[in-house]
Length: 122
Image 1 (spheres, rainbow, N blue to C red):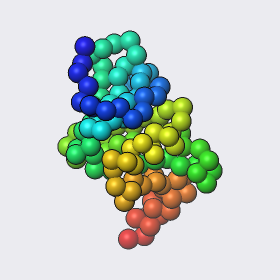
Image 2: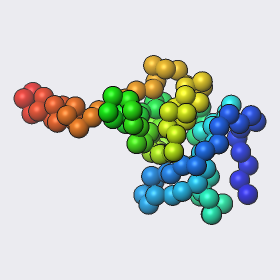
Image 3: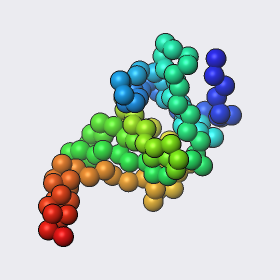
Image 4: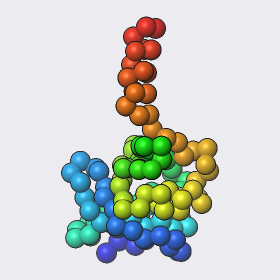
C-alpha cells in the first residue's frame, strides 16, 4: 500500500486520470499534495506535491458552466490531466494551496484556431 503525502485531507472525490488509457479512482487534495489513487490497482497512483506544481489549467466551456477536465503542469514531470464529478469543488480546494495567478483557463476552440493563423502570418 502507498503512503499518502498528506497529513490533513481537505477533499476526496471520484475522478479519472487521463495518462494514456483512462484510469478511474479517487482524487485526494490535502495540505501537502494532490494525489490520485487507482480504484483497483494499488501500484497505479499519482502524487504531486504542491511545491512541484507550476500551473493548473482548466478547460472551461459555456461561460464557466461546464469544466470537462483540468490539468496540473509540474515543474519537472510534465502535465497530468484529470476529470471529476464536481470539478469546481476540486479547483476551489486546489486554490487554497496554489496561487490564483498560477490557475489559468485553457484556450478554447477558436482561440487555438486564432493562434494558428497568427503564427502563419509571422
